Amino acid sequence: MAVVEISMENFESTIHENGVVILDFWAEWCGPCKAYAPIFERVSDELPDVTFGKINTEVEFELSGMFGIRSIPTTVVFRDGIGVFMQPGALPEDALRDLVEKVQVLDMDEVRAELDSKSKEEN
Image (cartoon, rainbow, N blue to C red; front, top):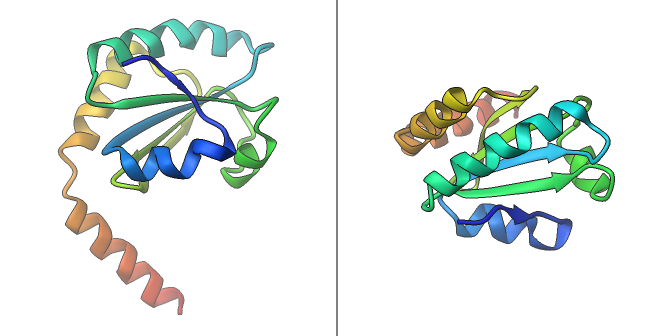
């Protein structure tokens, strides 16, 4: 699957209508982002069942702010509409593949139960 450009207009539908979504926050001027881009593309080509999206921080200020992006590239992962991973810095190719594999086998019932428990503690 080709990498999708993510904007405020398609963000919600992308994360809620796809199982696993890997997002790359980047900018045109960012050297590490340029080095990470081919890795991100290669892994996306290998995993057509996973949605890979790129968010240009220079254009999508609101999304960057929602996530508190302070360093790019930053990789954010959603599974079933729930954010399960966020890390600044370019990931090595094997680490990105490994991350996707681990997210695909997450027990989402357990994740939801943990989120419910944290929500109750906060209230």
